[in-house]
Image 1: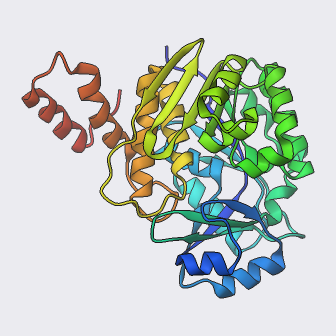
Image 2 (image 1 turned 90 degrees about the vertical axis):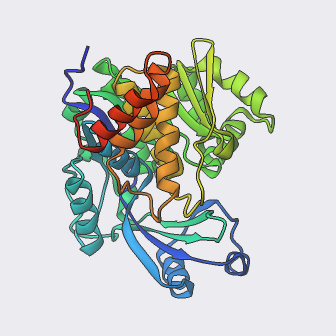
Length: 359
């Protein structure tokens, strides 16, 4: 049965504009950075590092916002809650998200910190090293939480990055209470190992209280949460404690575990990895879209893998294609392989390419 909720997913996360530049390994080493990681920086460091970067591309980002952008490209109903300032980058972020069809009405701050930005260095191997100045995004207060939206959404999706600042942490705790009170599901993405280093006890307590219905992690994050370097041991420790655990494994694909059932899919083949920024975000988009459609775990994982492949084949973390067509072309042969001939598959592919509506 189709959902009657106003939104299928409401997400709370950092409202950030990404500044993306190519860099060689020498710059990463000279700056003392750990390739592929994320760190928080202040305004002074942001200015210094920006001066050291090469020519850059600016585009709206933020982990949870990227996920909603991907879901919008899959035709889902989404809304975002996150804080920007009343400045140029804040206007860019607001315009970009609304233009995708994502509802966004959080009032901009009139004074104080500027809109957040993430300085992303992309090395030739496609790895992204992120340096984030949180600015206004960490000033999200409980008063800014659209409780009516949360109560009327199938899933509340929370970005782990935003758990770090005290104000936004309190706002997210309130959002969990609202979602739980309305009988809605709560999904949480761990975001980065450094967040777990700082707040792992919080996350384990929330899991112990049964407040997360869906937990997203990558290999490094799930191991950090479980306190082990053994991936299988980490999954065995965490999976029984959450209704649905989803773990991405880069080129090794992804797994989902629910009620003792474990499903795995391989990574989607790709000729050239251009930029891994947003890979996990877009995987979550595909998976959550599959959940909204009531699909099997295998289909949800496949949708996530397809979206992740598409995003790492481009520069930047925002979907630049109508993912519905790409995903449908992948799923149709899988779900009907024993029932369709090659000619029938080709006919369906042409039908979707022509813009047929997704049922």
